[in-house]
Length: 231
Image 1 (cartoon, rainbow, N blue to C red):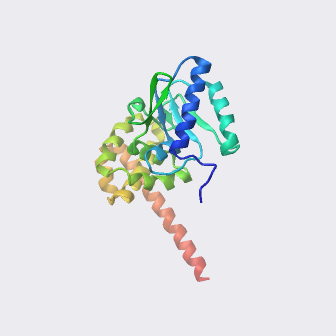
Image 2: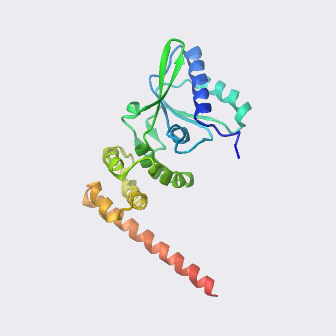
Image 3: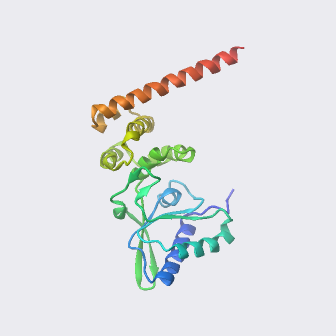
């Protein structure tokens, strides 16, 4: 069933066009870089058909324009609709995407005599940051994103982004989760993925310890469930 509260790519681009026109009217400027992220990027890359909101990185944001356009579209998409825009290249708090302005163009919008490029994060970048975010909806999206990339394209992007991971104390936990996800989605062993990461032994030892603890916890829960079923 079609959900009138969700936006496909065409609808999201219409919101972005209105936002840019409003921002030009209120501030006299257009942002140099607009990159779709989150659900909007998934729609742009044909990974998910629709998104709840419009998720954007914009190099310059006018809060008045965002508020005006958000209120306009709530009449169409419901009170919970929002334009989730950020001027920071740290998406969902884990990685600083230092090359975000080089994301590929997925559409062009004409604003007066200016052709504005609308970009989207690559599937590889989306995969890596969604594994980092690790929310329930991200866990659902990760295997879908994997279908749009390959191990051979994802690995070099991972190696490029590793130095941009902000919280180094949480880095081994991320490495364990990423290795587990890539092994599952691309038919590899976790040890082979670890080897391909080419990280320090300190990080890998911690990641393996985390993995061992999770496996132990899994088997304990499974044994408890089996014992309960036999009662």
